[in-house]
Amino acid sequence: MDQNIKEIEKIIEAVLFASGEAVSVEKLSEITGVDVKTMRKILTNIEFMYQSSERGICLKEINGKYQLATKSEYYDYVQEVMEPRASQPLSQAALEALAIVAYNQPVTRAGIEKIRGVNSDSAISKLLERDLIYVSGTMDVLGRPRLYRTTDEFLRVFGIKDLKELPELNESIDKSFFEVIEDE
Image (cartoon, rainbow, N blue to C red):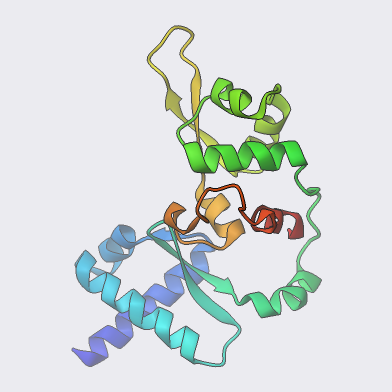
């Protein structure tokens, strides 16, 4: 069985490497023929293996999905070979709207504007364009306003597994948390 686990680990690494995107535990289970519970254990072992080894990559969990990623300390080196991104840092308005969506999802444009006190069309458009939020549906009321939620890309950019890792919402929240987006 030990050899079988090693082979499954290799398959998982190959799939995650080739995908370049986060892959769900369920999909990895389907591909390998291993039940979900066992798959979670295998992924935990792989994650630990990368953490305890002196390698430039790690296994990241993003909202119940897994992805191979570069360790943050090697970002500058990797950036040297990547195409420069044309995107500019998010504006203060976009960061405010993003925080509102993150902490109040699902939320409508009107809900965002009520909290911000100003029109947020441009900020919402920018967040949709950057794939940090998405339309998750509509409210069942007159006008059917769109509901917005954060994406897995939001989690990836901010380096968190899921929304439970967001800092507690209070008056003294460290604003630097939402400035990570400017380093893209």
